[in-house]
Image (cartoon, rainbow, N blue to C red; front, side, top):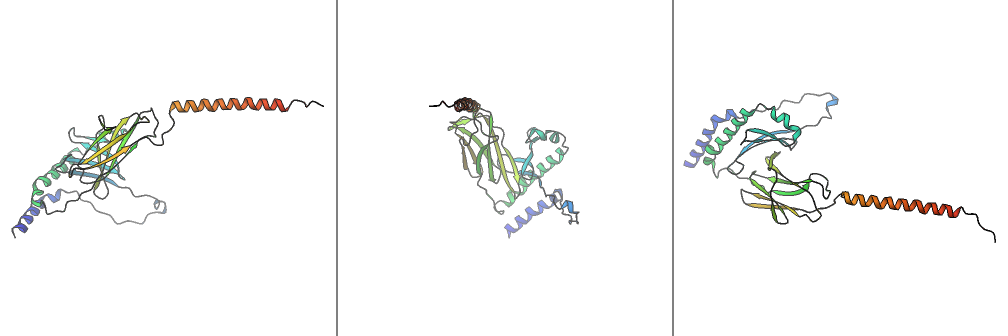
Length: 261
C-alpha cells in the first residue's frame, strides 16, 4: 500500500507540469491533385534529452536522420553540422524555449526520477562503430576519417582515436543526433593525411555500462597518387611514341620495291 501511494504521489507531482509539454496533432489527409502523388514524406526531429551521464543535456535537430544542428549549452548557441547551415543557425529565435525545455527536462530527472527509480524498465543499446573516409582515398592528400556510431542508447559515450595503438589528439567534438525510434547515433571526425602503412582505430566507450566497441581502418581501394599518376602517364606516353616509331618503320619497310632475281 505504501509503495502504491508513493508511486501515485510521484505521478501527481508530475501532473502540474504536463501542460508545459508541446501539443501535436495529425490532421486528416485531404484529397490531393495527381501531381502531388509523387511527393515524398520527410521527417524533422527536434529532440531534447537530459540524463545523469555525460553529456547531461543535449539538443539534436535532424532531417530524415541527417543531423542539421546541435546546441552548445556552454556558449548558448546553435551549432550547424555543415558550414552551409550557419545562416539558419544564427537567425534562430527559439533560444528561450530551448532553455525552458532544458529546465523542464532537468526537473523531471531531479524531482520525479528518484521517485520512480526501479519502476520504469531501462533500455540499453550496445553501440556499433565503423570507420570510413569522408573523401575518396588518395595517398598524400589530406582527408578526414569518420567514426560512425549506431545503436546508441542512452547517448552517453566517449570517443577516442589511436594510430598504431598510440593515442591521437585533434579529433573534432563528437556529434550526437537522434534517429527515429528513440535511439541515437554519433559521429567523430579526425583530419589526417593517409599513408599506405596507416592503421587507425576508433574506440567507443558506452559510459552507462562501460561497454567498448572498436573499429579499425586500414587503406583499401586507394586511388592512384600524383606520383603514380605521373609515372603511368610517362609510361603510356613512352609506349605511344614507341608504337608510332614502330609503325613508321613497318610502313617504310613494306613500301620498298621488291628486287627481281
